[in-house]
Figure (tube, rainbow, N blue to C red):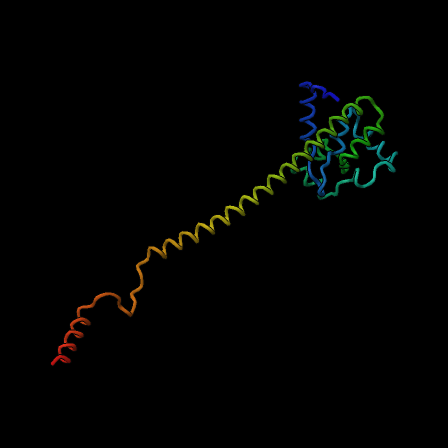
Length: 193
């Protein structure tokens, strides 16, 4: 199967979609308002279809944010507040599977076309996570090797220091001693007499 060349417009959309995906509760998700904008429908219409087709949206496909999560997102993404026309309801978060299912229940050509880009964005993020995990694993292995290597070098330096240290003086002397020789000479002279 030949790969279709991606246009600049599609690439721009793809990057924009990728920027809308974030981590929440250990999942990569996209908010209902962002997904609705991508699929060319209102957020109310998207959420209405989700409610009408609830059996197609288990909790691992879509879930409502908690008040705390929503407040945190408002701070993090600088979402407009209620007094300035912002969201009045706590949003839904769609996982990759939920985003695909949403395209199916909306049943519009644009939703189907855009769902391909949404899936590709989720896949690319998953690949990035795997690559990051692999990079982290290799970095840990390298750190371990360096740590072990440092210990080996430290042992070598210590051995060299021991070799360079002046030898301890032995109590027993080796070699020729003048006093000892003189004493032996004197003793042998005494015997000879």
